[in-house]
Amino acid sequence: MGESCGIKAFMGASTGDMLVDDPQALEYLFEHAPVIVLTHCEHSPTIRDNEARAKVEYGENVPMSEHPNIRSANACLLSSSQAVDLARRHDALLHVLHLTTAIEMGLFSKGHRSEKRITAEVCVHHMWFDESRYKDLGTRIKCNPAIKTAADREALLKAVREDRIDIIATDHAPHTLSEKGKTYFKAPAGLPLVQHVLLCLFDLAHADEISHERIVDKTSHAVADIFGVAERGYVREGYFADLVIMDPDKPTAVTSATLLAKCHWSPFEGHTFRSSVDTTIVNGTIVYQDGELTGEIAGRQMDFQRAR
Image (cartoon, rainbow, N blue to C red; front, side, top):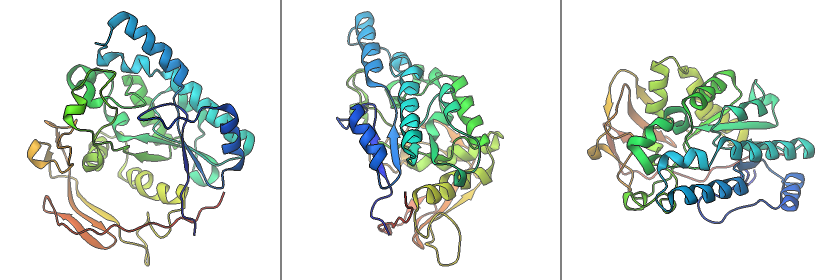
C-alpha cells in the first residue's frame, strides 16, 4: 500500500506561494511521478497582466465582478492545456482539479474513468453559483479558479452528465469573515462548503440537472477508483462504513444558528435546501445525527493502492 494518493502541483498561483510553473520542473514531474499528478490549472502571467489592467482602471478598489475577468477562462485554458499535453507526452496519470469553463471541456474525453489516464474534477460551488452572484455575495464567493458565467456553469453540469468530468469535490476553505471582508486583492480565495455539498447536489437532482446515482458515483465511487483509496467508496462487505443518509424531502434552512464550520459563515445562508442530512457515519461510527455532531472523532488514516 502506498503512503500517498498523488502529487499536487499548483501550475497557477492561488493561496500562498506553492507555484510550480518552471517548464523543466514540470517536464521532470510528469516524466517521473510515481503516482497520479493533480493540478490546479491557471496561467499566472495572464492573471498578472489582467490584475495590472484592473489596477489601472480601479486602483485598489477592484469590484468582485472583475474576478472572473482577472482569473479568466483563457488563463484556465492555457494552463489546463499544458497539463494535458505534458500528461499525454509522458503517459502520466493526470487529474485536473476544479475546472470552471466551457472551453476547457474539450480537453477531456467522455467515458468511464477506467478507460482514462487523464481525469477531471468540478467543485460543487462552480455547479451552483455563476457570476451574477458577485453582486450580492462579493468576496464570499471569491475562489480560485473563479466562478464564471452561467454558460460555463451549464457546460460543467453537462460535462458531469456526459462523464467528461469524473469527480465532484468541494475545495473547502473556511476563511474567516474578517478576512473575507477585505478589499479584492487582500481578501483570500475559498469558501466553506463541506456541510452543504450534498444538499447542493440533491437540489440539483430535484431540478433534474443530475441523477442521484451520478451523485453517488462522482462523490464516492470515482474518488476511490481514481486515487486507489483502499476499501472505501463503495457499500461492500468488509469495507469501511463511510455513509451519509439523506432525507430527500425534509427541507434544510441555512441560518447562522445551524452552521457547524468554525469560521461560522456560509455562502448559502438564507437559502432553504429541499433535502437534509439525516445521519453521517465515519468508519462505522455515527458522527452526526438529529442536526447535531455527536462529538465522536472517528477519522483514521487512509491507505492507497493505485500504481502508476
